[in-house]
Image 1 (tube, one colour):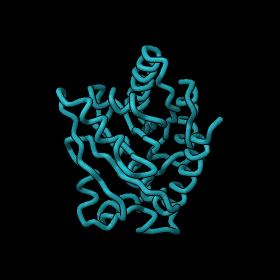
Image 2: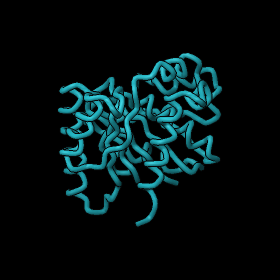
Image 3: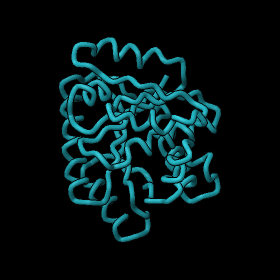
Image 4: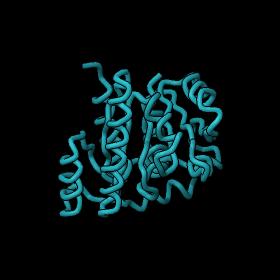
Amino acid sequence: MIVISIVQQKGGVGKTTLAVNLAGELKSRGSKVTVIDADPQASAVVWSGPRKLGFDVRAEVLEDDRLSQWIRSVLKQPVDYAIVDTPAGLGPVFDAAVDIADLILVPCGPSSLDLNAARVTLSRIGSSQRKDPGLKARIVTVPTRVEAQTPEGQQITAELESFGEVVAPPLSHDVYFVRAFTQGVSVRMAAPSSNAAGEMRTLADFLLERLRPT
């Protein structure tokens, strides 16, 4: 099983949108997937309410005194991919999600606040990996709410590249992401020919390539 953890110090950058739609794209390719919703707000669980996603979304909120139990619960999932959707902040859930990940995704919106939070997030991940050389997760930053060819899209990509990490193709602020949430499905299911679904396919291709053994 491959664990993909989605982390960011700041809220509102598209962690849950990324988690659910990446899961939907991977499922469409024949993989067994589950989303672990570790956020007390339970946005992914709410998204899955109509039970039309076709994969499990499990609420696994971490309590401070149950860290080892939480990790075991994530790692025992009988799936190809477990995608961990974390709350904003740099607390115990953040650290645990980083520790168990094979791939860490750091979504980042176009504002200066988003970029600063991404910088802090990457610094915390780097600190964890320096403390434990056994942590070898690949790190990918994901620009969100921007078009790739716009000045804003090019600027955020350049800023994220300056942090020294891999930058994925961006996800735009497409209305079909909103509609997918409203319908309780992934964007691949809601509008498979939309630009939003195409962006998710491109992103999934990019991430799967990063997961190939080197």
